[in-house]
Image (cartoon, rainbow, N blue to C red; front, top):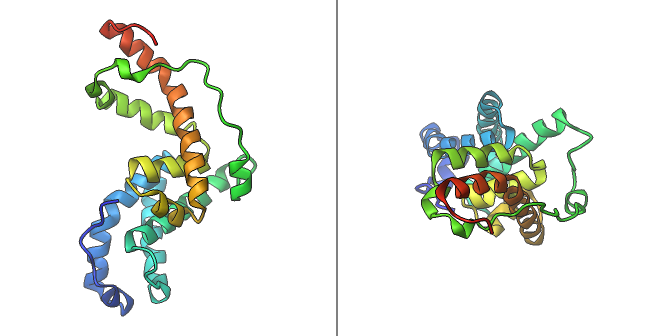
Length: 201
């Protein structure tokens, strides 16, 4: 993960308002993107953004600095987003690591070999929109790992710290998320390949 310019931790702890304003400015865009991708709702993402920094401000005296400030903020934001998802679907959202990791690996029905397409096909606005839409089909446990690891750029260790799970759980969930997304996106890329004149895998 690319850290924003360091902000003196001691200044934050003693309630330096300028330092905290710099923290908000530095991390608001990435925290908002995380919340939007997890919740699929811009208004709720705005609420999570506000709650994240409010909770961070209240918790600053207890922050020991064992993880980076960015990872700490991601942890708060991810927890806020997951709590909202659990309230929406309490019966379908796993609340502990064992439940989340008990999911069977998906069995893809139609997988397209994406190597047939030029790299620029993956970077189009339409392809990115398809990916964002497909994220909504993942369980919150898988979605949060994929968003933090592959979209926000956190390392495996940072993702584990942010979600409060083991690095092994991050790797397992990331594999499942990638497989499920590959299946969900296959039909789109199959059509793109046909339009471009490529054969199916």
